[in-house]
Length: 185
Image (cartoon, rainbow, N blue to C red; front, side, top):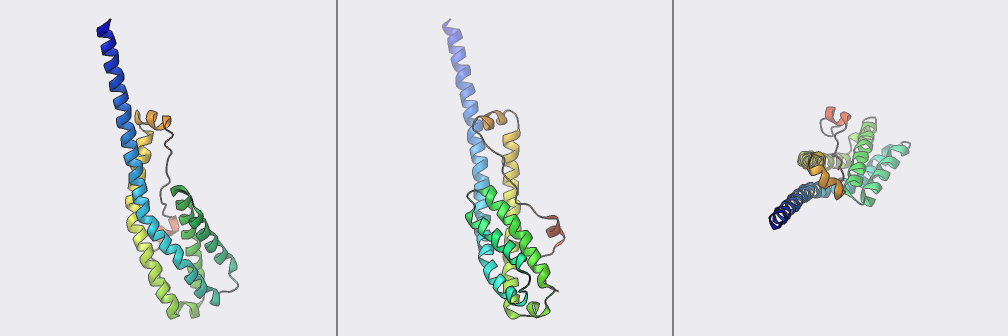
């Protein structure tokens, strides 16, 4: 009887240790995602901070294109109000779309494109976009590893028990895949 109790106790200890090991690995993987996003978050904030300057320069030449500026401003506000990584990623993806729309419109205004102020902002925005692109790969890799870990058996049992949730990737819109930086022609 005592041998059975000892064997049962050892099995319980092994099972608990196994669960703790999986839980700790999932926490480490989730923390890696958070770390990678923190690196991107700094740059996303820089981009969001550039938007008012870019809008001020562009608004002068394109006063009748208010919807573009409203979309860009709304996306920026959603980014600053975001409470978690998924909300920030969604807002960032909205900023990407709105920013591309404004840049496409700017190409229709030669006086705007030839302005020195816009050229300086263009360089700044391009630098920030390049930094985001460089760090996006690391974030997406960490996020994919995390999402895979919480879906694979037996880790999915522990992930479900402790309510680990999937995280969004920082997406590259199809238009951006064809878009080579921010270049005005």
